[in-house]
Image (cartoon, rainbow, N blue to C red; front, side, top):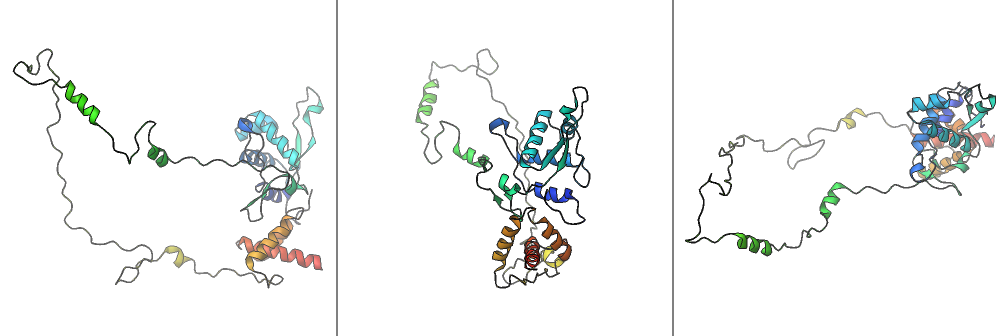
Length: 309
């Protein structure tokens, strides 16, 4: 198990690494998604001590709290053991047939975790897939309803082609009986007469539009109208008046911020604990609300200073 910052339980370092891991497995209908494995892992680790030991809720209890079946729970625990995030220290089935004891686990952060599974970068933006690891499947986007409606039903004529209704009109004319001296029309209500079409004779009331309508509305946030000063301002522009914190780049002074952040992320990602020790030290120095890029760059500075010393 890798080193953890002094005074910080392994629980929080383990959780930060768990949320970056791609843990889905299986194929087809038997595939278990990453969110399911992470959910089972999070529920299981809440039964641990602060040092990550004595995790033994039992498969049946874990299935109840996760709202999953026991078979899915068993597969997820096996996946966590395979990647090294869970270590089984006691196997309940070896205690005897009548003992009925649960397996006991402990949390661990393996040194080669970044080589076993795909993981998000320290900024949690891009998924990095190591060599030899199968990338997660990409879901095909669903077709929008508007596109399906535009395609029309099967067999329908395209919208830009005229529809020939001459056949239907001729059929209607042929079906109509010719009127002549021998043609008789039965009065309504008599047997054999055509049904009389009735409808509501009351017309809907006429709603006249209001007489006084405003000529124009107030412009939206900060929008300017010709000949008039801008109106309201966006609330966020007035409330956020504090200047952002700027981190002095002592050791990376001659490098662009984007390149410095990329170099710092790569260096921390290559560490056994993924740089959690130095990120914790940088957060303690800069504060909780510092931007992620400055936090990673400062953690790399602390690492470089420690190695040079």
